[in-house]
Length: 177
Length: 177
DNA sequence: CATTATGTTCATCATTACTTGAACAAATTA
DNA sequence: TAATTTGTTCAAGTAATGATGAACATAATG
Image (tube, rainbow over all chains, first blue to last red; front, side):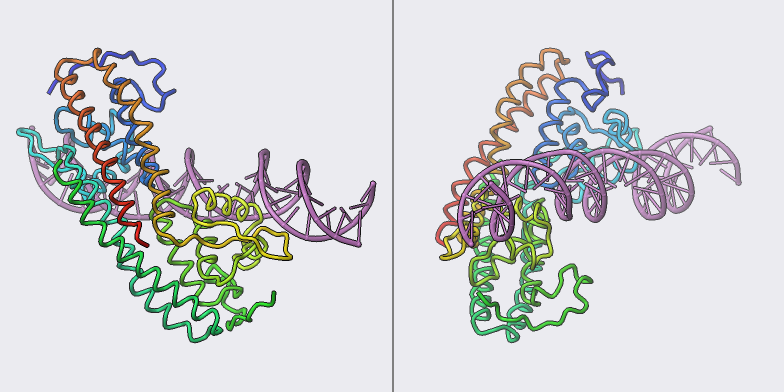
């Protein structure tokens, strides 16, 4: 259960947002995930958790995230749950330790695929009913507006269909990983 | 330059977030865009602007967004700029009116394509240099960690390559619109 | 040139979203 | 059963982000 000691000293730690419980490589990798997550609108803490786990050569338990990322219990618990629901991490059994241990899921298809489905496809579902409702309300519009809006609704439906057609292709291309 | 009067009364307006300068169809469509934008981490005001323009059967000038969306001059100006940079709206000439008029770009490929490039590809560029740096720093790690991290770096590179390979496919499938 | 119309910038404010930590629950150990 | 370990939940605080509007710039008009 002993950990190889990281090389860096404690100094200049907080300055960079992490303390020295992370070595410089981990800091870099985590930063990479944090940045990427940001561009997808995902919270920093979640990216930090995934990043650290991604670097780790062995499964980690909640305490370790709390300590090494200097993160609250609450955020850590929620972040782990979120990532597990997303399918980006999974639990593993570790003998003689009753804490739940996690490892990162590294099959791109699993992670990215689920993410796409959740983010994009979920929207489409919602749109369907909404578009029906919209088309139904055009009766109150001037003829000019009405024709235009019905065109637009058709267009949105077309976009949606295109999106749905693309998704399986993307999944297949993510697949061989 | 006269506008067909919208049907709804002024009441119960602010409650729904918009006032009655928008008819119920516009409200629905805008809401659809706002929601979708949200899931992509784009600001509400930008989605409102695009949504309104998407509904409009004629080009709109900045004043009209300000009035009808009840939005500040600043947000409107910035939102229009943002959307134009993204390629989601374009300016059009309107005779005898020196205000800049906008119309929405509705070719899915143009809008989604640029967005993907900006959001995703931009990240990849950044990662390249970062991954090089990371690999260089593994010398300070234990052998065990080092081997693992180098594996991970390889994996990230593979993900990146996969992403880059997928993008043109997606663009092509968005294309026929 | 003064005035008006159009549009941009940016410091400040407001809102949203994230994070925290205390309280709680459940399971385990002594 | 009491004490400890492990983990969750959620109200409240904080930080990040978005929105505002006044001041400014630029160009057109009379």
